[in-house]
Image (tube, rainbow, N blue to C red; front, side, top):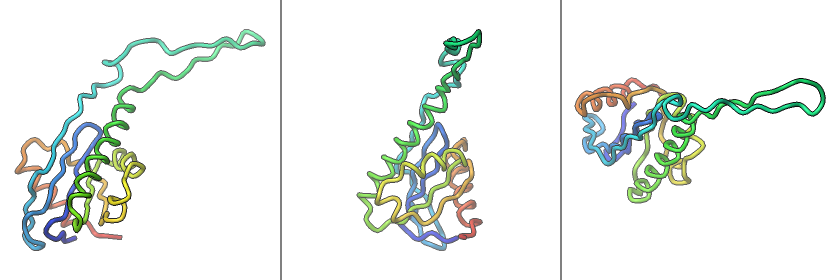
Length: 154
């Protein structure tokens, strides 16, 4: 797939967001960083260790337990909402920009429910791939461009 100049590229997972823009041409893309954030969201067992709640049945000796809260999943949901808000605010400033979203599959599912109106209208494609954890900017940029070029729209 080819992305034209000015296209916004969001790369995200449950903890990290990278918002880029193609400042190159359609044939030779070059990605510039517009925003980068990382959430401090440790695993659930590091955030709390309380036992799940229990309840006694009114009739008989049966007892039931409540599921333990998944604090990490809640943190990822909040981060997806924040990421969608950041994307929407940048999209409002870039009236002609198309949008490409590359995210880990679970994050992509959480983002879809959070897109604003402008984002939903200009979304060119979504790629379910986890590229947010790349260590260096040059490596990340090359991997992102490779993933976009290899993507075949449905």
